[in-house]
Image (cartoon, rainbow, N blue to C red):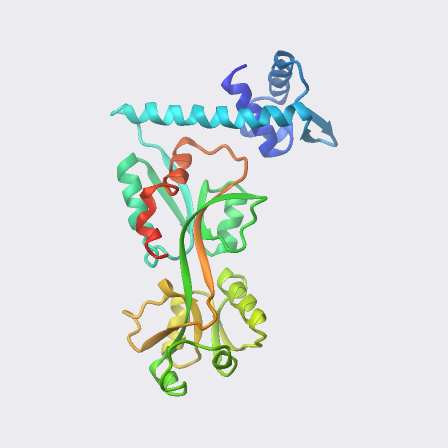
Length: 303
């Protein structure tokens, strides 16, 4: 049994069939089949049940997968630690998709710390949740920093980086129409105001829609904006109020904005996400696990 055979086995699972796995592993399909057959002969079991060009694990294959994943991860950890001992080791790179929240959540600061500590180049692609998830699913990027509220555990693995709380945002002029001794925003207040919201494809919109539904509120939405900075500008110009995670409300650029907590809380989580069962490049695996230790304290401080 070799590490290569284990990686071939895991690749077949990741890509669902032999032909796709062979292409991704830069090996012919016949050579891949021979490697798996050799592994099965050595183990004395059949690893895969084959039908309609798709593969599934046999009972023996399920047992082997349990240990193959551990062996592969331990091997990559060993390579990483040995590489770290080599002062002249060439720098690698990792492709990371992020939401347009680099400033609001100290993403750049945390990534800079990681880059300097590990001599790894981080290539950042910015986009909304839907776009970044598509790139991740298509394996165009290695990892993504996304909102976790609607991430499927069946498809993705993730580490939670931080939590944030939604607040009610209004202008000073809009505040005049609210109760004088206001401490928190009640459902009754939410029922009587006009909103500007992020686009309907965003997780922010979905979270708010579910929140309104839970409270039995049908919100009056006047405008939809594509970016949260546009949204804040609209609120600042008295076009409506909005709900946003606290750390997305930049009052330094909009001094006439006010924010208030919600009487009925609404929370969101941000985290680093990877595809289930995907064998990540060494550098990407290092970044993924970086967020599970003290290296991500800069972002956890928002919780």
